[in-house]
Length: 294
Image (tube, rainbow, N blue to C red; front, side, top):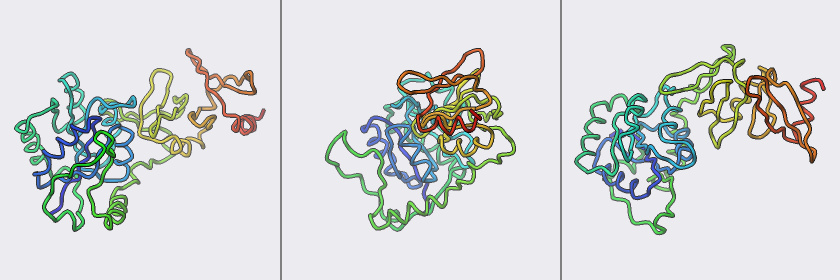
């Protein structure tokens, strides 16, 4: 029987254990991974075509569950989302992002059954994956693991000899081409509150790396995106963007000044009402001067 792969994203190991117990008897869902933060979840979501994500609203690391959900909104086969929260304050935003359900956590088994009923009704909309032979066996409750809260936060419940083959198959199943956009449109798609916004390259002042994500800065706003800085560097370099630092990619058309600082360091300033100062890596200053004809 084909099952829907589920990812559990929550900072509390007890919450993840309870979720596993609740999902243990659900015949159409298989838990294939856990994550504590949005960064860990992002790595798994890039590699595995999850059909459902049980997602805590409050996550460590500066990116919330709602932020992570926004980065998934533009995906062709985005997973179903079940949010877990301590109160109802984020419920409206969650359902605006297309949540299948919003659970006040901790939730009772009876309330969770209603979540499963909702998921079963919309099950055809979620991506299913063929399972290896180990999945055909009856589900067994997870064994006690040593280390308590020090347990690994990302786990795949597969036989050792099947893990490499299974992950390889999942990566091939996930259509990475959906992230490749034509360069000639000269606009960058980003998601905000469930909407896809196209930002003209000319309005981007700079891009800032943030772990495996990036912030795209314009004159009026900054957008959290799921793009890695290297991907945006490759995309924007033909449009006069330059990687001035390991963390920053800047629009050279908006650079107004380069200044030297004590200690042999350099920085640049950008145009606009709010002038932005960015450091220039020592290894990058020579190439930058050549590009600018200095």
